[in-house]
Amino acid sequence: MNEELNELIAAYEDERKELTKCLNECLEDFDYLGAHKFQKGIAMANHQLLILNSIKDPSYPEKTELENMIRYYDRLKTLRPLISGYADEQIAKTKVRLNIVSNQKITPFYDGQEFDDAIFDLAYGKILSFVFHLKKSSNLYLKFKCNKNNLIISITPDEQIGNEMFFPKDKKRLLKSLGFKRNKTKEYFQLKFSLTSFKDAQPVKTIVSRVIYDVFYRNELDTETTLVIQSNF
Image (spheres, one colour):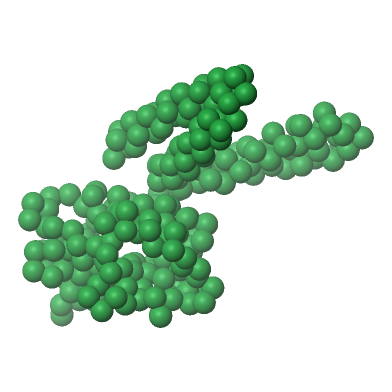
């Protein structure tokens, strides 16, 4: 998976460089309409890079934020020399936190052996279903079960999601782009994954990672997720 991620990240970085070059050319020619279009393209590329880098490294968003804070205080020292002492203190504190985060090795829960085992046990009929809780306070979860030769991944029914979990149209569009559809009664979104040639849990984990980072964003969810298995016994 890392090799594929690195290839995607490199492709989006190349695209961003090309878009930035086109943006600068438009600005030189005073073509502000064209510049606006390329600026939107750069924003989209940045969003995809954030998602992909977060999948690769769950601490990426926090590290990026800390690096941006250091750059901000560096600029502040130049603009307002009188508060350079305060800026230096903030830079030092931020660098300590950045060093801690950079040295932490965080493995996403869904990339662990327990999650792999649950998927295989479900695919081979050893368990009935399992629930992957994303945000317990909002009752937001992914439920995994099998029906005939399909693995079905469903999201909490709309009416059961807590009020604090905002679930607007843009998130629903993102779910549809990943292959999720409304069930027959229109109560919740679900995705059917064929188990005809099932050998590897990685495609399933890729779907889960896209839901976490692309649809709901990592910072909206619990830092520690839980997995509940419904046994056949």
